[in-house]
Image (cartoon, rainbow, N blue to C red; front, side):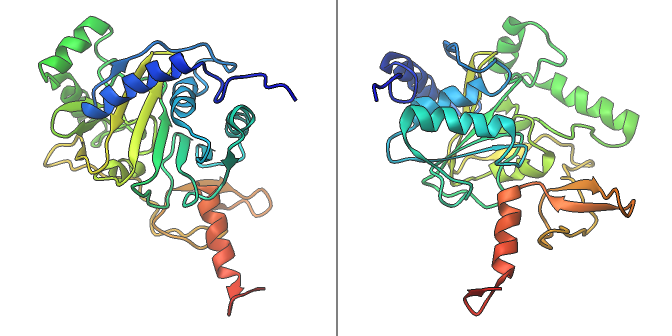
Length: 286
């Protein structure tokens, strides 16, 4: 069969340009590097930034995992995997430990990432100062001058109104003591996973045409006041109904039959792995 596309969809020049922007982002942790975002066969806003990073970096020996809000089988995740596999011929997996490149929307996997892995996060809004400063020119100046009082005032106003910060996702972080960064709309629960991560974390915003990065073993601290420390979501010691896990990010679900609520792991592959482990007795599956 005649080949329809270049390996990994893009021409080699496009991949080199994206890789150059990526190298710069790795060299300056937390800094947003502009890049020439390409047209993709999916709409902007559906993960084109992350997908462009994945396509520019992936090689013939890589193994890809794609998750969307914790699920490996959502429409978005399935179609991204299909596009990448059909234009590269590489293997895809649901197992976090097996993957060399993990592209994700709204979650960092529960299984700790290793140094040989790359996590690519899809980002809708890369600018953490945009909520109070609409001008791109002004936000660039604020970053250059390390003037982040607006971000602190935003958190202070939340505390004054609600007695706590209300950034349930995309809570801003300080990277290597220099740049305030939007970690993508991951839950607060996942913010600490960025700190001193063994894996390289890349963040891409296709619509906003920005790439930024958290290199391995980089200091990442969630913004918080001393008297109102940063706190992750609490599930009140609830365990997953499916696998019995605790200490992971869970979804609160409703049982139509009983009328009760229950909790289940948000990371579906992690949950399934725990179920499989518990079903093994003496090396045999029951």
